[in-house]
Length: 138
Image (cartoon, rainbow, N blue to C red):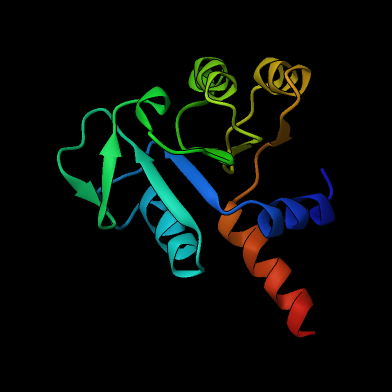
């Protein structure tokens, strides 16, 4: 996927469900969503083992539990879990599947695209956002 498509996604959509949101501030699954929240995005965490809040927000056990509309499903889970997450994302009417750096699952990507979702694979959302900001200020 080209960077301009990523930038269009980041400009158009503002509600991001983060599957695998971490309580550990050292992990990308914590500091990437924190950065995005600081940039004005609505972050909704998915972490079945977390208790309470992460980043000051209620955390849900699954995408299906989220009471509001989700634009982007950002995946911070092993690649092998992507197909199940894609099925849930399709089920809740998400518009985009974004698999973080190191997460690649071609069949899951194809399944999402067949259902009409845009797909970004093996890319860090924070890096993509920073690149889009650099282009704006250049």
